[in-house]
Length: 286
Image 1 (tube, rainbow, N blue to C red):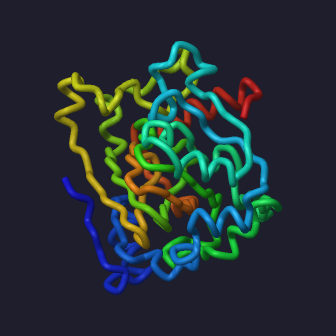
Image 2: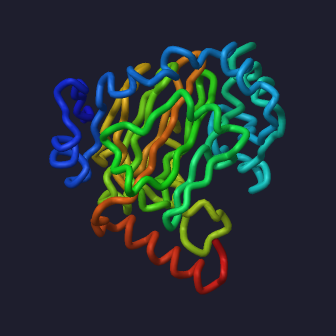
């Protein structure tokens, strides 16, 4: 099933809330990020000149999959590499596609902005990136939670997962292009997340490799929502929806805007994550 694609000129923030945010349905807002300065300026050369010397960590896989759950150890599955933003951009834009797809920078490593308990924190070294992006009008600014940046080359596949922060997500495609497959939280039994108490701590990730030629029958029959993001588009991912991205552009830059729902809808994934959060609190973990 194709995710609805609505031109930004035909969708007001009020309509967005009524038609998509409250019923928690994904939508592509075509051209919703076209006015962002970053869609015009974030070339590899511009970013290297602006922040190329900034040192950071990023994901490093032996394949194009992130995480690479086919690896032999947890350390290899979640491996990271350290370099500068400039060296990362070179690594994901120059050379064979298979090698460019082995590196991925996300907000897991460095957020741009966090808002917690009324306090806003901005990464001082990455703050200049915020000069080129603005919070879209569709985001409830008073409930803004986190802003992340993503940088990648062609061929990256993010593993099927849900975001465990109980937030809605508006993903702005600033350069490049991506394809996304989404599954509703009610499909949790067919999506086979790594079991609680098992050896893999990525409990928000599926055990299923969506690129495998031999997929479980119940997974194949599960209703999937397909979305295509071109430069300047926005994708709304409701809280606790499973999703996987294929990065198709030669140089892909995204900024994600997460915000807390006005009222979180209970679902199998929400209940599962509430249990995990309670266990972590009792154990004194994050």
